[in-house]
Image (cartoon, rainbow, N blue to C red; front, side, top):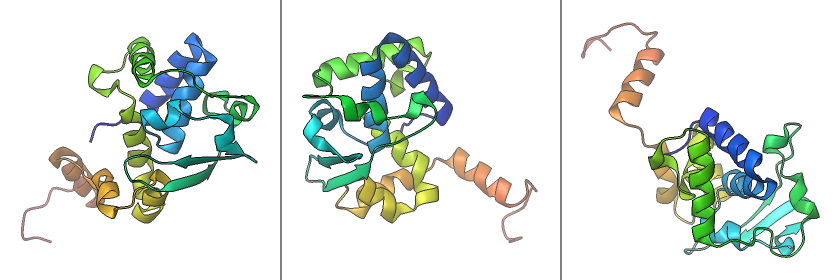
Length: 177
């Protein structure tokens, strides 16, 4: 599953912020709450109450209610959303795609990562190991654990590095375990 590394996300948010506050908040909100493009571009001030974002997820997913992310770092702070009125991001899904393309290009990110759904994959990948699959499932609004399980997949290279690290980087032969 293709996702942004944390450092790549920071570069993307910086590039978006340099272009416009709206673009920055759009990308941050999609990432922070694991929203699909259609979900984030249709948010209104009615989705935000008392510091929480409530979204009826699409594609048969569940309704979620999550606190807005508050951070001393303005790059990761969603509190400006509480002051917005009407439709929060009055853009189409296509325009959102173009915003990610533009900001990602400015951030020097690889083309295969420059699509809005990569933001949902990124929050899933960033949190699955520490938060646990059951919490990520609920947070992303998945009805099926199998949907969330996709964030647990790794390739052979990642698995080999993890095993080597767990073994103290010692070479070991099959059968010695």
